[in-house]
Amino acid sequence: MTTKRKLCVQLQKITSKELDGVVRQPARKKTTVCKRYDSSPEPEETPSKKTKTTTDIENKSQTIREDIKEECTSHEDGGLSVYELERLENIRQNKAFLSSMNILQAAEDLKLCSKPKPSHRGLSRSFAAVEEVLPARKSLRLQKIKAEVLTLPREPRGTLTYTKYSSPKHPSGPLPMNPVNMEQGSKLPSQLVELYSEDSAKERKMDLELKEYCSALKHMRITEHTVAKVVKERIVSAAFHPCTSRLLMATGDKWGNLGLWTLGGDWGDDGVLLFKPHTSPVSCMAFSRAQPTQLLSLSYDGSLRCMDVEKAVFDDVYDIEEGLRTFDFLSHDCSTLLVGNWNGKVAIVDRRTPGNSHESLHNMDPKNVRCVSVHPLQKQYFAVAENRMVSIYDSRCLKKNRNQAVSTLQGHSLSISSAYFSPRTGNRVLTSCLDDHIRIYDTSAMTTESPLLTSIRHNMQTGRWLSKVSAVWDPKQEDCFAVGKFNPRSVEVFHESGKLQHSFEDPHHLTTVLSVTAFHPTTNALLGGNSSGRLHVFTD
Image: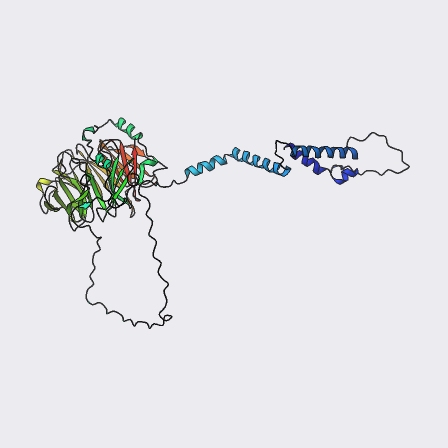
């Protein structure tokens, strides 16, 4: 207790009775003071230790008042009253009590643990246009207008016919590369054209030892600057450009938008340029290994286009009425393509041939062709993910109907999302199935039934609002692949033996499911796309 507060308490104890000469006795000793008569002898002037004279009490009270006045008017306290000083003392004690319980530190930790906001880099949020205000509706009776006599329409006769809805499609032919998020008539940045023209084929790294590879993965990080909104809707496909001076990425969403993101670029929206070459989901895309300025994209609307940055156009490569699903390069110069559609057919398309039709069309699975993958060395072999089986065919022996598979990959109990040859040798095939398993098969011998090497249990049930999860190989490492994970939100990297090598996690910048993943072909970089159109990049 402070000095001023003690003085104040002492003042309160001084009552009027004390000033009149009455001595307050303790509660335990309830004694009364005897009356003194005139005939009684005078007592000796030896006052008791507990009795006080009026003069002493007055002197003491005056002294206390002077001390309080002196304390309240001192320069140190700024002339504050006793109440203000007592309030400040209570505040100080409360702060000391909270500090002793670490409540302030817990409040700061709670703010840090709260759910972080999504990154605002990239495309800005588009607000809906203000609706036109229509005049108030008035009844015909108030307007003194006779009401119209309406008659019911005739009942339909015969059978009802239903017309299948299809989104409007762009006309065939080349489309100009006009960015949607820039002013009309804007040209592509010259620096972007130079970056896409960069050839990095000579800088490809060889396979590392497994320990060195894991060490490189641990040095890859995600920051606020490596997360951006690149397209408007849910990401369906994504790919890295092979250049190494900067990270260039492309992605497509479910409404046909195609976004290009240059990490660190100062054009567009934080280096993001948005185009609309398709009108339906862009299910597959890949950069040409022979001409890095070209990006091929395929959509459900039945169009396959080639984005040429030098010409600034989207060329029409292949166009049909039926929906397309997947494609892969059938030649080393990327001039011949293998295209799969939704009706279980595979088409061979030669880009050197004028027009936008196929060279040949072959029936595979009666239901659907979900993925095609061409062998990296022996280009005549290609794998097809059919209904519940993966078949490997020889393009030299294809027929129009009833094609015989060279090898089959058995063991899947539900639909297969993807099947890919290993990137360097093609001795392995990686499959992702809706039965919650990732499988690796040995295709080095191309036997009638390829043996199963490894089966990894992994949750594949994405539901309606997420893109299908598919495991993809790392082009720099022959025996490792990556796949997105639901809980916790992360991207896991596995060895072909089934051993987990690394898990990319970040509670601040990675809070959503990354269904679509892709590795950079030459540098240590990994991207992941979510259902809100954002790309997350891990790099060293």
